[in-house]
Image 1 (cartoon, rainbow over the protein chains, first blue to last red):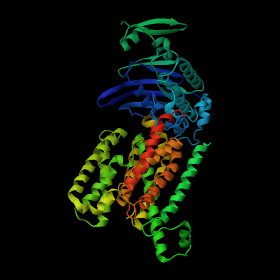
Image 2 (tube, chains in turn yellow, red):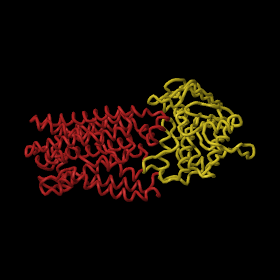
Image 3 (cartoon, chains in turn red, cyan):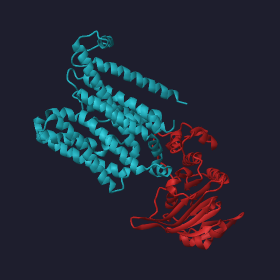
Image 4 (cartoon, rainbow over the protein chains, first blue to last red):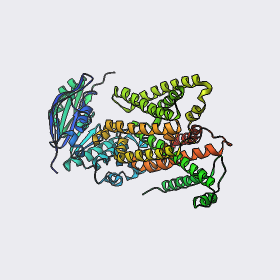
Amino acid sequence: MEPCTVSLEGVTVEVGGRAILKNLSVTINGGLTAFIGPNGAGKTTLLRVVAGVVKPSRGLVRICGLEPGRARRLVSYVPAFLQVDPYARVEDVLRAYSYGLSDGLDPREALRAFNLLHLEGRRFNSLSGGEHKLVLIAGALARKPRVLLLDEPFSHLDIANQVRVARILREATARGVTVIMTVHEPLYASLADNIGVLSSGELVAFGAPREVMRRDLLEKVYGVKLEEVRVGSRNLFIPEISW
Amino acid sequence: MVPPRTIIVTLFLLALLLVLFTLSLSIGAYRLYSPLDILRVVVGGGSDVDLAVIELRLWRSIAAISVGVGLAVSGLVIQRLLGNPMADPYILGISPGAALGYLIAVSLGLGLPLWYLLSFLGGLAAYSIVVVLASLAGLTSLALIVVGVSLSYVFSSASIILLYLLGPQAGFALSWIFGSVAYVPRSSSLTLALVVLAVLTVVVAYRGALTALLLGDETAKALGVRVELLRLALTATIAFTVSVITAAAGPVGFIGLTAPWIARVAYGADFSKLLLPTIVIGATLGLGSDVVVRAVGGGRELPLTAITALLGAPVLLYLSIRGRDVGRL
């Protein structure tokens, strides 16, 4: 499957007179893209713009050449956190993901694809944070999207589940799915093919991890001192904490 | 595969509804009929009086079932639209608005048909005010709840003042305020049934979007649900339905909250799968309450809302307390 291109041209989002995204332009040609940046930098808003949840005040968004409103069937969105009806079962949540699909969606198949069949019949709100995330990703991928959007897919996950999710996302890109995510952990950002750095609603850097993950840039964006540690082929950054 | 517990609950509810329907034809102030008596009258073996009485009770049963189903389905939809399992159809101010309209008509000394008309218009007017004010805050579920609850108290306060001023003149208005299907004329029973059928058709048409709304506004929007439009269209439909029900039978409480809740405990939260059980539970609660109203009053009829609350509250309390373990099932 040919990867789908996601492009934003001069996108500005203003809410109550405050610009959350400022004149943002970026083109993503498939693969795995991570957006990093401090809290409130506009990462989630960027995903919501691509998902068609938020309309930009100015600028153009195109998904496989289509505007977001016409590309609903091509895009799946996984929010950072989901609080649902206390009596909702895992299958109910998965079935809710079938909206707009002519063939529907088989919850058992979606669970089997990620070895989650043991969660069948459980109340969704009784699951751990990691299981929540895995079920939502299973639902989103069961829609067979061309573009998968994930808001903080690694948050609330233990190390084993972080590795599991990273593997799932990499397998999705191998099948031609364009994956765009927001992350806080530099480690998982550095797994991406491209990284975008957002600061106060502006895209201050975009490119391969080696080009973007620079100590000077990250220190400026986050406003903290960082220590650079090389592990294997990757540069990791640890904040200097003085008590 | 449908779990065995679900099948047992469904069969039990259908059997209960059948028993209640038979009881509803049997019990009343005139005389008691056994199931065999009813059968004999229906096939033409009874007197004209017996036939008239059973026919009257049949229409009353249709009204009670329509009220139960209409409120239950309205509650299910409102709970999903607002993402709040404690919401009921009255949270948007419809019932207090309808009650205020009714009492204004009584206070002005207008004729009986205008009591119902002003009640209906009061419900719709209250909903319209709630929606206009909530839209100033973006028509979110929180805005609708806050504005709806606040204005409900305002309308209720105005109703209390009117009731106080009416004094002994309140008379018949009091029995309406406490809810009853005893005074619903045959034509209104038919209207109620048709309105409920119409709202069911609308809800069935939107069941896909309502199923997706389980994922919250944001994810549902990403899937293509036009959330604001859906919320506006369906709350307006519910406002119309509940206004018709309230005008005919008064503000009957608790069914709109309890029926969808019971359905969710037994069947989960998939809207498409919840609709039919909610209809059956609503019909059972509506008809069951009306049977109890007639059976225990000793010749006088008890207020319907008192019975729906007495039947509904223990179920709700039991489910809420048991709900602590539900997550681990």
